[in-house]
Image (cartoon, rainbow, N blue to C red; front, side, top):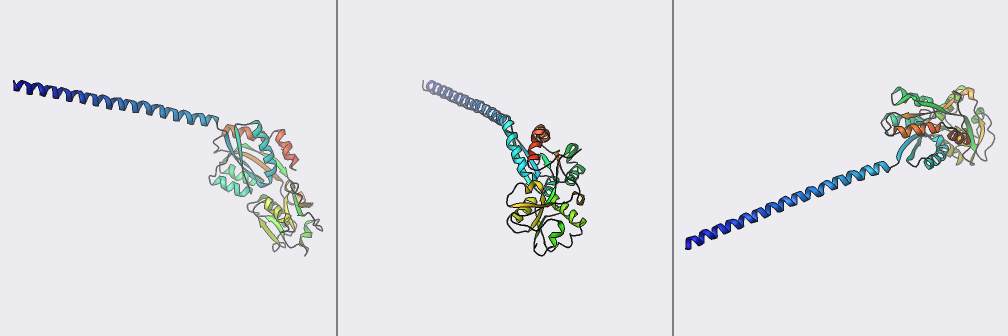
Length: 288
């Protein structure tokens, strides 16, 4: 009788143990199933969220442009973004030579607007801009400016006068306006004679600033820059025969990640709507 009790007790214990193990297994399986079930929706939800954000985000175009285009492009930006809410324009203004080097070294840019065909040609030659996706957009004119109250300077030769102590010029190697100024002064046999008076600037806007603040008695800028201030005035226009034609080419950078948006803005820059803005700021349209 005692043996039967022991055996029966043993079977009961074993049965209880099996039930407990089965329950634990189901719990673990249920827990695993629950984890997997919750993980999948999390990944799907995250992916959907990212896709929705990408779809709704504006295409950001980085436009590397000559500093002399600042005012005109900022006005064009306001009009373009108002009619194209899916596009955001970000401008990187500077000297054309500096911008060209940045693009050559891999700096992100979707379009390049240069104040010199030389800088655009360099990028075309490097294979960074397609020759078929660049055009001569604008033309400009070189002038000499003096402080608003300045007088007595009416021609290049006047820059030699003792009363003129500083002449501001963009760095010829990187600033197209400086290169044009050097060409003009060299043609007039004045470049070497004015070296002790010359103050070089990083771009035309800095040249203009030097003259506006009285830190230079005269400076070489584009007519468009001179028209943008009342703190300096045009003393005279430099004879076009003394320098190469000033051309502003525009082009799409091959590395753009927003090709459709870049192409659309490139075409818009050539529209009459945009060209009217450029004309307003003193640019002209080159004859093709």
